Image 1 (tube, helix red, strand yellow):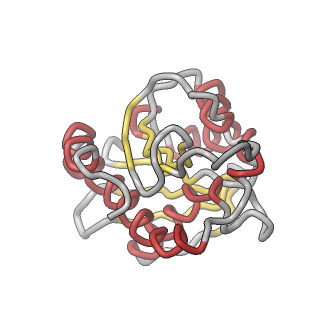
Image 2 (cartoon, rainbow, N blue to C red; image 1 turned 90 degrees about the vertical axis):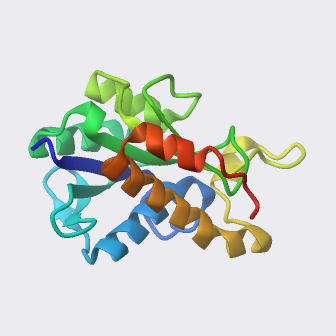
Image 3 (cartoon, rainbow, N blue to C red; image 1 turned 30 degrees about the horizontal axis):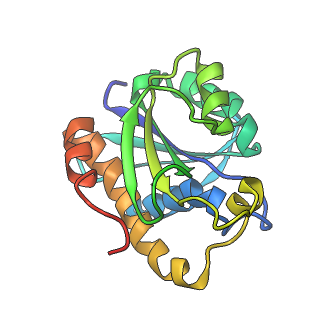
Length: 196
């Protein structure tokens, strides 16, 4: 199944979290599913799963939203990878990123988790850190605001207006990675600044 990719959107379950900064990865995967014309359903791997193609004849995408909380995403991701027989290097994880500015998308493969507990748990469960990360910038909290409170809060009114464009960039980054490779995606998206 070398033409199949597992694309994971990280977030926390439940309506309390659905529009928060921490759930931007899940929001982006929802948009990718919409573009592929597929819908999610419960799966034995403890994920919501949708499968489809970016275009006819293109690579197959298995889209996953873990049913667990962010910090315990590893089990569901590893279970989906095993079920669909997908190697870590064919897994793309979309997640919020404090260390890059809001409205910016960056990509990398492997490396550390940068304090992101979802990434830490996925790397541990897979036994390898070499999955691709689509890092969706949410920026740092203003002033003295607690980081945990910040990531679990909703976007400001000004930010909310830009979120659809940010989500579109994240989706396009996934598609470019799958169709043209990670380096091509990095060249395209790393040249873009935030705050269009």
